[in-house]
View 1 (cartoon, rainbow, N blue to C red):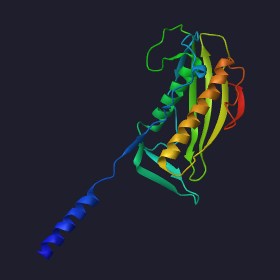
View 2: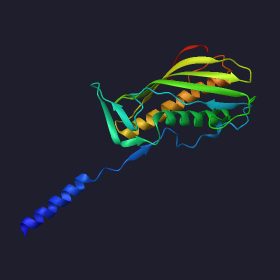
View 3: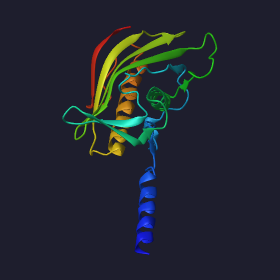
View 4: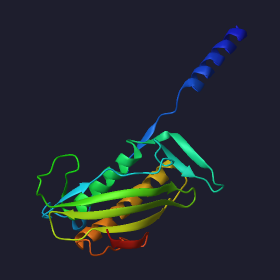
Length: 212
């Protein structure tokens, strides 16, 4: 009887080991309700076209990646992005720019041939979360007016947002805020007609801006 009980216990133990932990999904889209003063009505007089975002291969992973102090990288396979990272970043940039500028993003539809459009291109060089440190977003971006007045502008932006913890949720939250800061910085360039751009906050380092 004792032998049979031991077999049953072992079987249940193996079944428990075979059960995969639940997968948690994260998005770069903000879940916060925008404040009234930060949202513009859809009367910008132009459209937006946020084109697909490029990301480095080492960052383009479905799981949350956190860089450790010794140089290693921990991959959290049970904590993942809801979409490929490039799509996540493009979607978050579009969402933030639309609500900040009061314009419509027409990237997924065909805009009229002569419609006034600000085209936004973003090339991400670094998308990191450092354990005990900060989320770092290093990107080069370009805005260009089509069928309206203004100038093309090319800039590099480095955003650093403290993690506030070492969990995947902390990393995802900080990276979400970093993408929002990047969008806010790009918005300053569009508002200025491509003449200049301003850092959205103290978390943003803006450099190398030139006519693009």
